[in-house]
Length: 636
Ligand code: C2E
Ligand code: MG
Ligand code: MG
Image 1 (cartoon, protein in one colour):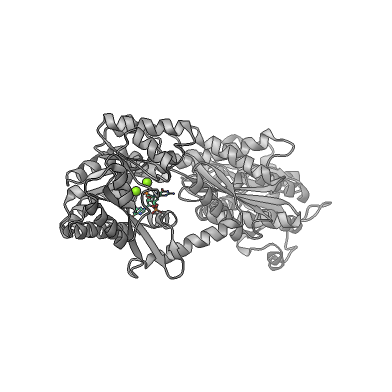
Image 2 (image 1 turned 45 degrees about the horizontal axis):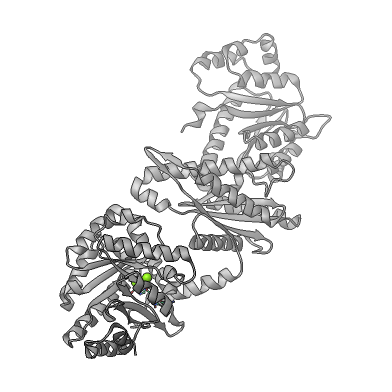
């Protein structure tokens, strides 16, 4: 931590007189040998009033401070030295500037130039006699607290102690700046710093009519790493990601010597916080290059990362906004790049997207949904519809699926595929899901009381609900409260929810099954889970996703998949429901495969509770009839 003991203090000495430069050299190169250099005593008498070198020498052995002095004899050379030091990221802490350096420019000129290049450097003006009014120079070379004076002839201790004091002030300030502008974990510039950098780069792009790109990166599975492997592993992962970003941006510069795509510098990468990073491409040749850089960054991050005994693959989603077309100021560009990232992630994690204006409209709709969703339960805006599920072998109704409906004063009827993801992201689904479960159980119980053949009540459960440790308790409470026979309730969870955390899923499924209810895997076939893995879970039903059913009559692959799911389920004694049956050829195929249940618009749309009740009443009336007759009579 203590920089003082590790790195020498970099000092720039600017004086036209070789003897004076030598005397500085004596003071700042503190080895015993250098202090005893020949000719020193002679100089000493010329420069210093007393004879203080003995004292200096006697303390040399106990010193911990070391210096790295650089010497210049003219003002112009000093300005060049400061420029170069900054470019190498090895800035000087202190510069000693002689006031008069004939025939070149004077110390005040050099000080003004240097101050402009390096706002942090401590400047010391050395005057042989009172040839300048310090108050005047102070005005020329602000800030005053970084400007000191030294009167010649000086005492070596004075120079040495002054250097140490100023350097320690300089270092403390640098540390503060580091804390304020750099991310302590990865060492990358932080949000504040990257904002300053973006503002500067935008100004330059405007002046030179250049194109600039902002890449907004967000890791896709970081939260999971943090949650499962702990924060230390998460931190380590972020450091690896930062390093890979640095390397791939650097690599990009070297590989395209003539026209590096976007030509980012190391300072153009920043950590915005959490698992969000920013890459600035300040000088873009064509907008296509920004996509190429995004692609390269994704590839670089996708390489497995070894963390302790775990090999992890993290992918970023990347959004790109381009100046001038996507925004003229830093805030707009950042917001639009963030939005593009969000869309890329939504569409498919681990990909990138350019911002486009339609994203704003979609985002606005999403925010309106979120806003309106907040009070929706209290305002009684939800209702349930019930879609019958048919036993295709007998033609009877085997159950109904409760489907959530939302009608809002401002938005009208909103599709569940639109508002349920928002409810999930915001956590509102927990309260809404509880309402759905209670309402559906109450309805089923009411129909039962009327003697209607409900069979089973299927209720969709969000991954957020399923992940709650208290969820099984909640279900039990609702069953008790509504008096519904647990055997009538079937909860539908999606395949991806089960596969997201198999150990947890197994435990939760067993707890739910212990209540006496059934479990179905919804949208089966879309989550790429293997049948073999699913077998370990005590599920009662698979619902073949609509996409397979839809293409039964068109795509022989999907037909084969549907047939295989049905056959394998039968051998595992798991029930099967085909979702989204819309026409007779599909139904015929399912009957041929001896699929048990089917659900779809061909048989019945989701129904208002009154219409569902009417349908159940007809089921009761049909009694003994052929399969086809029953289906016809029931569905009307
Ligand atoms: P899901 O659970 O797979 O529900 C079946 C969806 O397919 C329903 O859409 C239904 O109206 C639709 N559908 C049924 N038959 C056909 C057909 O023949 N053709 C076509 N094209 N579509 C058909 P819906 O009601 O819009 O619900 C969409 C999804 O929203 C549901 O898919 C489910 O994942 C979710 N959802 C609905 N209600 C709830 C709920 O109460 N809680 C949770 N967590 N999710 C729900
Ligand atoms: Mg469902
Ligand atoms: Mg489904």
